[in-house]
Amino acid sequence: MSQRLCFVIFNYVPYGELQTHFLETISLCQQAGHQVDVYTLEWRGEKPPGISIHICRKSGLPCFRQQAHLAISVHEARLREKYDQIIGFDQIPGLDIYYAHEPCVVELIEGVRRYLPRYRQLLHFEEGVFGTQSHCQIVTSSVVLLRAMQKHYHTPSQRLHCLLVQEKAKETLTLLPPEIKTYPNRLSRTVLTILETHKTLQTPLGLHPGMAYYGCAAPHFKEIMCLTGQVVRHKEGRKTLRFEYAGQGFYAKLHSGIGVREWFKNWASLKPPIVSARTEWKAIARLKELKVPTLKGVAFSERGRIAFRRQSFLVTEELKDIESLETYCKNWKDHPPIAGEKIKMIEQLAEYVKTIHNANLYHRDLYLCHFLKDLKKDNEYYLIDLHRMQRKIFLSRRWQIKDLSALYFSAIDYGLTPRDQLHFIHYYHDGQSYHSHKKLWSKVGRKALALYAKENRVAV
Image 1: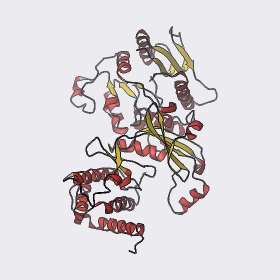
Image 2: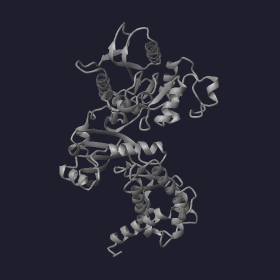
Image 3: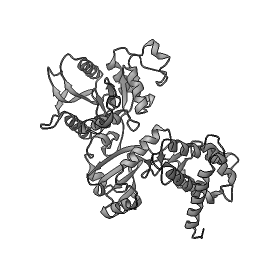
Image 4: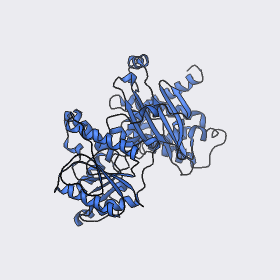
């Protein structure tokens, strides 16, 4: 089936090795009947017949900003020209296929250099291609590069395609799928195989996970912020609504700015205010790395430098066949579940909470209503409402107690017994007993009961 393809390369200079692979891949795609366009900053030499070349250089910008401008131009062209796939020979976010031929930037940049604009952009672009929120298929001939991707970005092995694997490396290459494509020096054939086997990413309103790393707002930012649909929540400058696109349900969280009064109020209480959907976007990516089931992020973007006026949005796919644990367990006190179901649930929840706490992540709203049970998969629960989740290193015990007490408080009215509590503690601490962590759980119990008394207007 013929596709419209967009190829991206920063600079084309004749006779280079990368440029040779580039032309070979374009030629093979044209022979397969695909229509090809090329976006670049500079093109030297003869132009191949049958392709349209777009020069996206903008005068007055430094080199790294030129690359950001190219990325924006490619994304806007994707919406305008409706390209089926974007294939990159240089790294920009939003690619469908990328030929990885350079070392990981995250391993080359150390110390304070990471905070310079140039290197921050490089790291953002790299995360937009290799990160767990991306769908990009990555082709490379470097085993070292493959290991670096999975070490720093936890790139799923299903997205990795190795061109050449040495015999000595096969035994130790456990991170790659067993059916490795072995096309020595045949990059173009591998790209064509991926085009035939991987579907085009379909997203609503032209949204794309890569836009979070472009360093600019989405092209249709204003239209997205004015989306209409079924409003689920509207509070503190944040509105959550449901809408449909092509028969698929999506949720949009629109942050319109918390205002200067709320911003000062939070800082006066020594609580950093949540001013953007970026917090939840990053939390979703981190939970995917930790293999904790959660929402699937579709796109994120923000604009505005002033914190209390910053606007942003986050779009996630709707989860199907799910039910909140608050609803699922509401009758357990009078009608206990079948034997073993409660224990399995407690074990799984304890595993999820232990995993995020061991990574120094704290939900800060960890109630049963924020766990959704998958009604089709046995013993799988999605953790949602991550807009307050933060990574805490200092005073982490305080946030650990806050999470555990909130979960305990929300489960008191659902038939929770002392034996269930001991089971949770056993799994949370990898088999250690309550007495080994008595001080922690005493504080958790007191805080949970205080919350319960306050909720029911009973004196402690």
